[in-house]
Amino acid sequence: MTQSTPAAYQGPMRVVSGVQASGALHLGNYLGALRKFVPLQDEAQCFIFVADLHAITVWQDPAILAAQTREVAAAYIACGLDPKRAVIFPQSAVRAHLDLAWIFNCVARIGWLDRMTQFKEKSGKHKERESVGLYTYPVLQAADILVYQATHVPVGEDQKQHLELTRDIAAKFNNDFGAPGFFPLTEALIEGPGARIMSLRDGRSKMSKSDPSDYSRINLLDDADTVAQKVRKARTDPEPLPETVEGLAERPEADNLVGIYAALSGQAKAEVLARYAGQGFGTFKPALADLAVAVLGPIGTEMRRLIGDPAELDRILLDGARRAAETAEPVVEATKRLVGFWQAEV
Ligand code: TYM
Image (cartoon, rainbow, N blue to C red; front, side, top):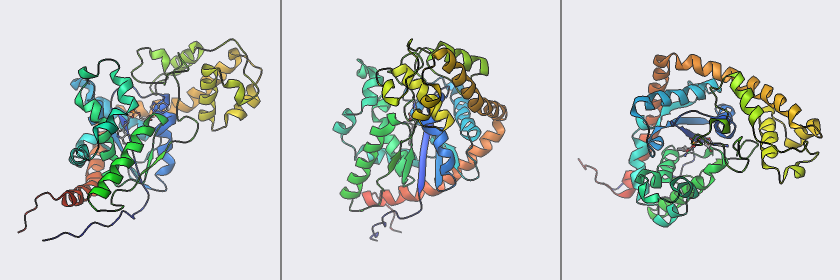
């Protein structure tokens, strides 16, 4: 029996994104990703998962991995995702991601992965000691996205290169297997203030879960006093705030704090400077701390409530995994047919 070539994807806008289940979520995750998911659920089918398969590319304590997975799901919901509309699930619960990842491992080229800057940063001088999973990580990410034939992926700026790789894999697969448009050329949604939030200790490095100093980041579960203390201790320079955005050019820490204020308040940096120009950090930092507490406080409270009800979270995650598989499995089946895998002809 010969199979006809599946049609190019022409369905509705589909959004996919994920956050790793590797410990405390921070302000960078919120401003660069989580916050962007919420309005998209009104206009698109959203598949938002907890990336636990990606998390184990570096060591995760088995005793707490499931709790970390629930914590990310709690953050999604606390930020405003509605589990009835958006499909929320753990990545490892939908095996179609892995089925497609293997096929994509055979499509992606080693040269493409060798260019991935995030692997270079994470592996440092000792790449031979890292897991193979850390190296092929972006291929799994491409599978996460394309197994839903996603049209759009909201992420922070650090994921830009992984999204470019996803498009390269889609294009090569479609071309190699004679299926134009089967995998869409997914667009990254990165723009906007908050796409790259920097460390509070060093305005030239990204705010990150893996930074050893907890003072480098504001966690979504930090209480109000901790948030205020971290903002107060954030590194700055002695100058007052400038009048224009250009005046922030050589001042990475000041630029970052103004950027955070802008992203949290929904204003442009210029508007923030119009209000605070000429003032020192003694005035600006308390205002920023108040704003951060006002925005993050209710999210933290709701997260804690949800984390306290793991049965409810599990019901949501199970239901999400079932709905996600319904969309993903037919895509994997069609992909396997294109590759030419055996199928019983009876
Ligand atoms: P992860 O878990 O490192 O980060 C989750 C999201 O948060 C964004 N982000 C930031 N945005 C602004 N400033 C920061 N300092 C900052 N730090 C993190 C990230 O860009 C990301 O959007 N590989 C992904 C997870 C993933 C995924 C996917 C994402 C797996 N498969 C498929 C989208 C689609 C990651 O490690 O994100």
